Every structure is written in C-alpha cells, then in structure tokens.
Image (cartoon, rainbow, N blue to C red; front, side, top):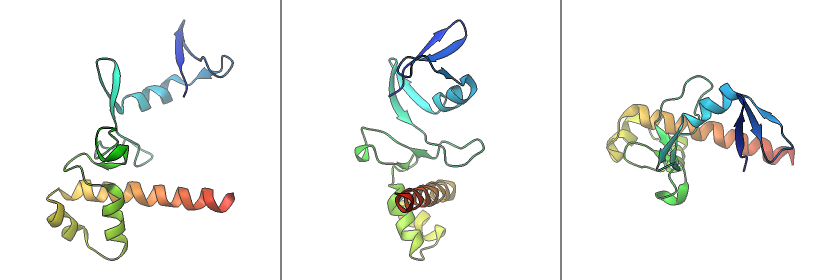
Length: 124
C-alpha cells in the first residue's frame, strides 16, 4: 500500500523513500473511489484508456470484492464467460435485466483483465 503526504504541493510517497507521486495520475484514480466518512467504500476500476464510465465496480461488501456491474451487481467474470462461449449481449441483457452498456463494459473489462493475466503468466 502506498501512503502519500501532500507537502507544499508535492505528493510524497511515505513508503518509497520520498518518491514523488504524479498528482494528475493519482487524482484521476482517486476520482474513481467512492468514500464514506473518509473511508473507501467502492472502487470503479479503469476499463479503457480514456475516461471510463462507472459501469464496473469493486465493493468489498458485495461478491467478496470481485468486480461486478454497478447496475444489477452481476459478476463481470460470469458475464464474460457466457459471452466467450457465444451468448449475445442481448441475451445477457435479458437474463440479468441490466442495460447493454453495463454488459458491454463488463466484457471489455474482463477481456483486458484476462489478457493481462495470460501475458503475466506466460512471462513468469
């Protein structure tokens, strides 16, 4: 875990020998965290390089902190698995009673995530 201290406009990483954090990058990521009483409550992971919608969420109180859609709270892994074996977006929308953008974003998130896991595993 990284803890940053705002010192004279610089974000200093207290756990990395004073390494400076890049404020715009950190702020972009912190915008994706929903807080309650100064504690992180919910995280919306990045699903694409540009501005990602808040359609995929990670909530430690739901689904054991595994990624899910923020509408309907459906596991992104389940949606991706069903799509990967040939089910259509329309079928998934109907089965889970959520809108197409949430299904599409879950598929996008898991396809990138599964590619990253395969790449990292192959490199090891």
